[in-house]
Length: 111
Image 1 (cartoon, rainbow, N blue to C red):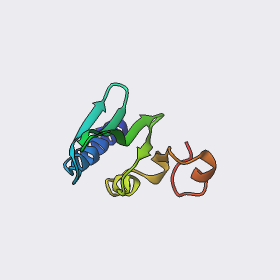
Image 2 (image 1 turned 60 degrees about the horizontal axis):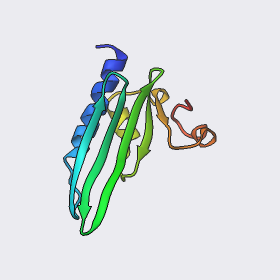
Image 3 (image 1 turned 90 degrees about the vertical axis):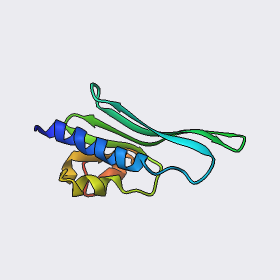
């Protein structure tokens, strides 16, 4: 299996794992969105908590230029650590929600 296929599989495994955890409040579903053709992957929450609408992206990862970009992570989960444990080199992981200046101070790719 080539590198990009491995990255797709790793991302899907991570998001599938975390989609099993349901919020402890309200009637909220966690949905996985996998766009394998364009390499966009998301975990979103959809539903209601009492009379308040719940909708938002919890995790968003892309594969761009041979690297995994963590675009959003509103959870306490360390997705980058999970990816490294699955064999993805740090130089192929971009913490996209950090500014390029901050990315330079990490062990991960700048872009």
